[in-house]
Image (tube, rainbow, N blue to C red; front, top):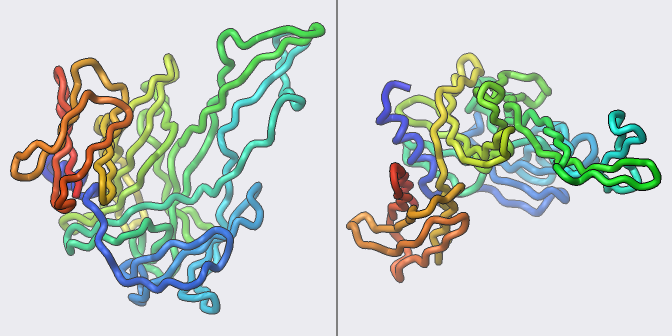
Length: 333
């Protein structure tokens, strides 16, 4: 990234609201539903849709790229991942622990495919829907490409959970889903690029969840931003970071270029502006102001805040988190 100004532009641009677009919508093709694919992301300039078929949740789901029920252009098998599920262990000697089948329910499964929001800042183009798959974001061939998560689990015994019955000791295990990185794959199942979550082991941190993927074209460059929920191995406190990555379609590569703290996240509806602050501290406040400086509302920072929109409903608003040594601002429309 060439300078800090562009970094700020990229972060703010990814949170600008979506605008409407024309896209082909047909009847639901399967139980998984569909997502529109903007025609700008297809080589033939035709709007498509991506359709999930959850026919085998334990192993894989099928993703179909289609213009209609009778015009399927590609079919992609997506591996499913086991979801995080706490469980119990038992031991007869206190050292050799085994899975306790009698007190555990079956884990769930979910597709590892990640949907993202696309923002073409250069052309002021903001599609309304999340995108699952693209032909031209990651390279220039005609195959469809998509992003999948590389998932692992962190299993930790709960302190004080051990109990003994009939000479068998039981303990409860908390299982946390850990995202080690993500892969860019094509429709043939070929891995085009892999990007490891940066510094996760070095700093005793792990990525528990990514609540948003954004890809933006800014000043001729293609960036990906992720809103990451970060946990710590020492005390399991959580915080939020924005990860910034540079995508090079010519080499199908993704390079991590930085991470910044992002304790505040914002969403909006026609009636409200919703704010979440992780690890809110005493004295911190959230304020919402219009672009003209007019104060819309203010409140003590917390994990869940909601501010009613003014009667006009439209416009751009500044949401500011401020306290001792802290100031973060996000714009929302």
